[in-house]
Amino acid sequence: MNKKILIPILAVAFPLTVDAQSLKTGDTVTITNGTFTILDATGYPVFTHQTNSSNFSRDIEVIDNNRVAFWSDDAFSPSLTIFNVTDLSETKYTFPGWSTVNNISYGGLAIDGDQLFMTDMSTSGAEARGIIRFDLNNQAYSRFADHEGYIDVAFSTNGLLYALKDDYWGHLDIIDPTTEEVINSINLDAVSPRGVAVDADGNLYVTEWGGNVLQLDSQGQQLQSITVSNNLNDIDVNASGLLTVTNWEGQLYEVDFAQHSSYLLYTGSSYQMPFTDPVDFTQVAPESPTLQAHSSRKGKWINTTLNWSTAAESVDIYFNGSIIETSSSNVAQYSYSKFISQKFVVCNAGTTDCSQPYIAN
Image (tube, rainbow, N blue to C red; front, side, top):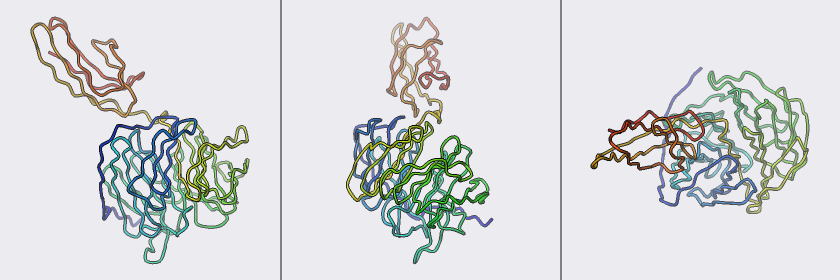
C-alpha cells in the first residue's frame, strides 16, 4: 500500500469571543450555506451563527461538546472547517487534489474518534479521488481507496467505514480504516442514492433523490422503505437510533422505521440544502477531568481554589471522600480548618471518572 502522510497546505483561524455555547445529547446540528444552527429536541433553533464559510456547505459532523467539523466552500476547491461553538473560532484546512462533482448533494464526512474521513472525486484539474483521512491531533492527512470516487461516508459501531460510490444504483464499499482496504462491496439496489448511515445493529439507511429512505440489513437486503419528501440528500443516525434526513427545500425530517413514519422537525431556507448530525454523547464517555489547584493559609483556615477542564456537562466535587457540590462551572473555592486533612477530587457527574486528587496543606 502506497501511503503518504502530509500536512494540509492551508490552515486559517478566525477567533471571536462570545457567550459560551455547548452541545448536548438531544441536540441536532445543521449547516446550510455556512449558517450553523443548533436545534433542541423539539426542532427549535436555540443558536444560529453565520460562519466565514458561506458557499455550499456539504456535510457536518460533531467532534465533541464544543466542536463540529463541516465541509465548506465550493465543489472544486473545498475546505474542511473546524468550528468551535463555544468561542465561535474557525480553522480551515485545504488538501491538494480534493474536489467533488458540482452537485450540492454530493460530498460526505464521517468521524471515528480523532480521525475525520472525507469523500473525494476526480474532477478537471483535480484528478485525485478516494477517501481523505484527517488527524485532528496533528493535522496530518492521507488518501486511500483511490480507485474510486465516493459521494458519502458513514462509520459503524464495528469500526468499519461505509463509502457510497458515485453511481446511479448505489454500490457501497465497506472499508477497514486500519488497513485502508476494501473488504466487501454491496449492491444497494437504490435509485440515485445520495446519503448513507449505519445504526448500532448494523442496519443501513439510504436516501434516494426521488424521496425514499431505505432501511437495509448489513448485507444490503431491503427491509423497509418510507417515502419522506422529494430531493433527499443527507442522512445521519446517532447511537440512540435517532434518524434525520434533509432535502433540497431546506427541510429536516426525523424518520422512525419502528413506527413507519416521518416527522418534519425544522424548515430552513428554500432550495438551500441543510446537512445534519443528531448529537448523542451517551456512547462516548468524556475523559476524566484534569484538575489544577492551589491553596494558601490565612490564620486557622486553608483557602483552596480548584480549576478543572472536562467535556462533561457537570462535575461532582469530593472533599475527603464525600460529595460536597455538583457544578457546571470549571472553578470552585473552599475554606476549611487547617486542623483537618483536606483531599479534593473532581469527577464527571454521576461517574467514577475522576481527576487526580489534590491535597491542600
